Length: 318
Image: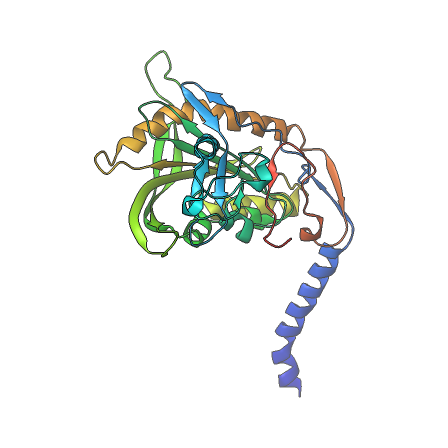
């Protein structure tokens, strides 16, 4: 009996530790960093020579196409609808239909609405420049729910993409100094192909290659490694009672098969203009590091977005 008790002791101790941890996390406590407040960010309509606009996503998983708002307006004005039907007017926005398959359209992609927690703030614009491929810039923010930011492989694959390669590379992040030196920053890059399907038959008719580059940031820290983000979050949460919003900034650019490395130059030109936008929101979030949140129960139960300046995810059927 004594031997059995000794063997069971580690398990009992572990269960006790788990029980104490649950009790502690379920009790009332104060966290700092304003993780449920509004996100003080605006995606500019103009970034140097690039002009930005909203993007709409088909919620039909057999189609999953995306459309710049100007394209939807143009196709509606021309009377183009799915199956040759006359298109509905471009307004109201909530009533937009996919011009290819007739499915519902949303500012949030189907993969984001399905996989991310409810009320995940998402900022996005597609930027156009004559003679250049479009740049789709997206910034997703966490709240109390840490699942709002996760490895992009999850969302990309769930949306039908196939990842061919993944690596870290450095890109220009600002103008050159007097000595001609250009500041650089690392981005995590994924080489991706997306199958273009016939909305009627569901068969793949072509492949669209693209480059997807991202980095992660908080008010105090930046990284391209998710494990580094987890470690920083753990330290801040456990030893500082600090739960700031983390952001996930990504740039997606179509790859021209005839110029497969041209997207690198695109990022080198676009990122120095986009980087100050992220620096600005980081500084504004850092100013809230002492804003308290009194929390009772689990963190996930307090997940919300109290801002009104952006869209948030809403699970289908909600």
